Image 1 (cartoon, rainbow, N blue to C red):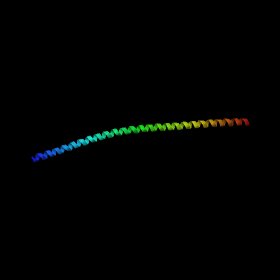
Image 2 (image 1 turned 30 degrees about the vertical axis):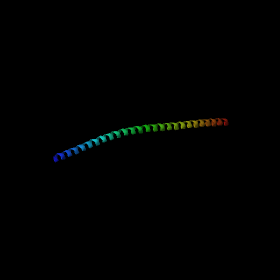
Image 3 (image 1 turned 90 degrees about the vertical axis):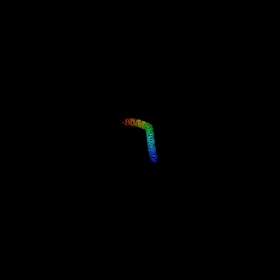
Image 4 (image 1 turned 180 degrees about the horizontal axis):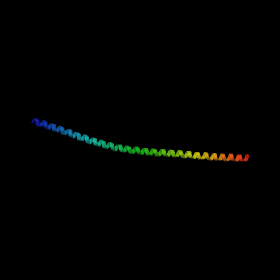
Length: 94
């Protein structure tokens, strides 16, 4: 009888260990899946933020280039006006 009880206890203990291992594997799988999903969300969020920042910087650069281009056009116009004035002054001297 004692041997039967010992064998039964050993079997119960092994069964408990198997159940614990299964539960641990299930928890591990759940954690991995949760981590994978969270990584996907973070990746999408990072990509979206990167796109937004890229668009903001592009707009900023385009505005700066536009302002520089306008300033260059104004300087060219003033230079042409000065050239014209100098040409008229030279013609009046001749």
